Length: 215
Image 1: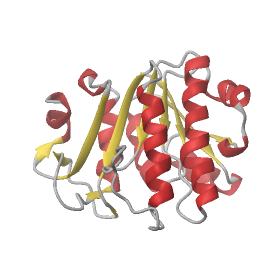
Image 2: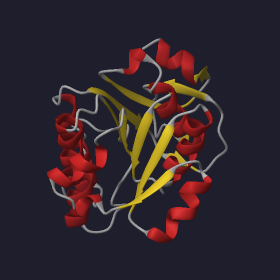
Image 3: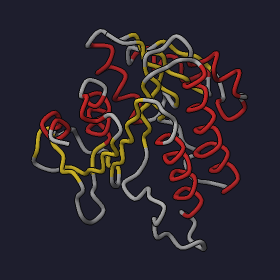
Image 4: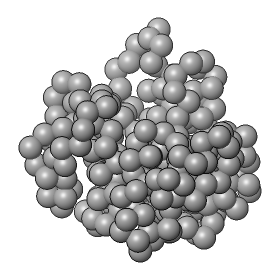
């Protein structure tokens, strides 16, 4: 049983994650920007906190995360302007990491993407470039934070039903269903082998728990 704070609590991955954690006895808090989404996260088994993390400073974020055992960063700008992407996916994520350190939260799971690397290879003229740059900056900051971190890095996200099985370090677009991404996050929180690891994956043939145990 853990106290888990999910930032970006109304996203499709988060809404799949919340009932998994609640059903196993965790206390789950979902941070959402829109108060109209409160009923959805409550129905998924989470408590709702309405806050725009991109507008919170370090002290405010520290107050938000303190008292939890785990922070899961599942927020994102969702495309749009480069400015908004950097503000959310890089700057707010980095502040949340620093807040976890300041607030004594030991565990941090970052939802990233399979290509998040310093040499991600995205052309600066590509509209995806700000996201790739922002996610790598946040991931790199997390790795240097001293927290017990895991970076969950799926391939192309789909709305397919869950399979419960993945493939690590796959080739191609590494398509994976959002429910399976949620299951990987949930499993990573109880699998010590994921601490200090970036888990790059797509759907595959290996049961999730077995894949993570073998990292």
